[in-house]
Image 1: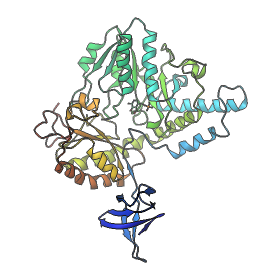
Image 2: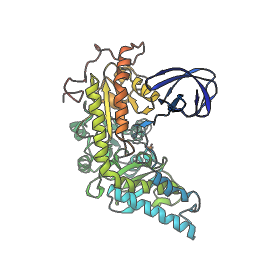
Image 3: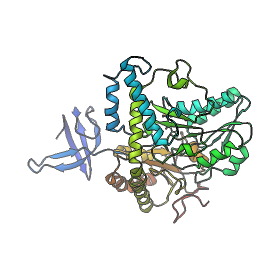
Image 4: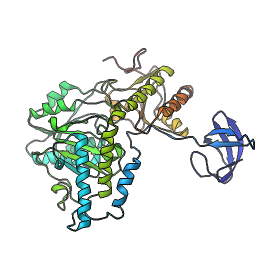
Length: 465
Ligand code: PLP
């Protein structure tokens, strides 16, 4: 049999799978050209028989990408907007000549596009950075420098490592006291603990707008008001929320906000930090006068233009994100919960990003499902708690005391019903296979070992509170 550019010897055909022996380059299969020395390989693809020749053909199956909280595909319109800034419009925006001025105008436009997306009052409240991690670091370090008499930080136990790793470093090196506010089994912040941590010693509160693993949304506007009462600055890591939730920062007490291009169909390596006018800001990166003296270094102009365009598109697609994408997410979630026993939603089912489904599966290896899905061309990601004995535990699921393996599906505007259908078609078989196949590894949950958070029959979530 010939598939694409090479010779494949057919061994066995089974439903939608083809087992072949390869002797050379076999293109036209899902994984592109594959060079294997006569080894038996399994390829994914729809099999059909040609009506004319009677020969079998393998049509590569379209990959299903449901890992949009990890990163998103750059929108083709964003790519088009960026291209001239690698070629004709290569000038330095700080240059006084015409080439520099035209690029400088494009940077200003991108700033206004971001301003519109997050509802900032002034465009100069936006500073471009290299991404979410830099923005988070810049916000926290600036606050400590601006208030040397305040030596405490309040954050949550479920923040991204961009915040938590920095906090741990500051504890060790600068004797900063860090309050990590716990969450309940639905991932909701412990408000009593939050109030108790707020004192005049706190320099900055950093609480994420939405969690990257569960999608749980925190009430940041209210939390910011409470932080103001003790004179602390309020920063939010909104990397997962910007572009998915409507925002109007000018009507809130939020002082600083981090965002990242690659989570909203923009390029990687570009992001921004919103700093409200009047906040005493100390730049992280020292050097030239770029970005109103807030972030030194020649601007990443293609990235900035890409982020601006992505912001404009995000505003345009916001309704789609909160209606069509949400209904796809709900269909996926309901479908899995109905078809597969002992599964439940991880996180607050009400206060959640519209695109994120984090589902717990009892008695399954933490990485098993994403691994088998990946072999079928479906991308999602895994999460497990410390209690599951996984080598790579999720601090978020551990904080929620979720004892099961969890799988995160995160959708975006590129997804359609066919993607959800494909997952629903293969999931029951995958889970059954993993549950039937006892593992000697530490990641498997035994039914007896599960103490708390067990998926409750008739309930969408794994906890009673
Ligand atoms: N904060 C959150 C909540 C994230 O999800 C991420 C990326 O996964 C980051 C920060 C880091 O952003 P970046 O990749 O742009 O540095």
